[in-house]
Image 1 (cartoon, rainbow, N blue to C red):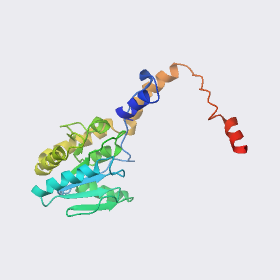
Image 2 (image 1 turned 120 degrees about the horizontal axis):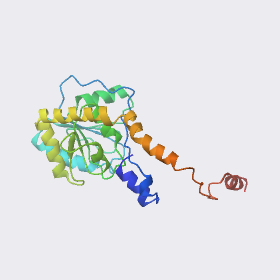
Image 3 (image 1 turned 180 degrees about the horizontal axis):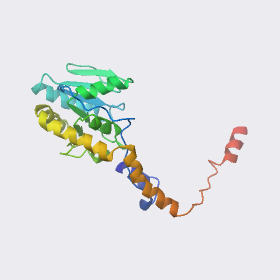
Image 4 (image 1 turned 90 degrees about the vertical axis):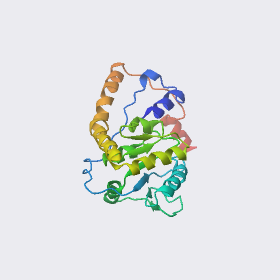
Length: 232
């Protein structure tokens, strides 16, 4: 998918660099969502399951700082029940109803995912499809969200910088709107699965043209070995 996953393939699995192609991922919709036509609320939306890896604790710290200056602000957390609810923070848990999730995207003003590590970040693509400006951290997320164009990229583990980015978007709706519109355009042009296939096809054609490779021999995964283990 993204650059970090590609580097892992090279560094940890010793795949030759020239055989690795980054193609990204696409928005997981049959059709892109309707453009929002209602007013946005002063809400920061987080969607993710792995709370600590995705920087949820840093987000809580940052949001408390934001709320000290903007008491009307809210933080909605989707995908986990790990953090405890507090003033201004709504923990919604797992939202399986796609229409309900779409409504949360449509009402929020900012999407935030300050991950410590992310192999790609399809949820940011989903947020951008809903014209939400995104606040993220460097790595694969910053390959999806372009700093100053479709969102704001802040250093990891930095609640002060994160709070500043969130406050800026909440305080300046026209700026947030511009980033959101840019994000939607980026999804439409580059972050659909059709676009991913277009990027993937030349790499597959090159691989096909290089000729068949002899499969690696590994007794651990040979069917006969498995049968012997099963019968022992």
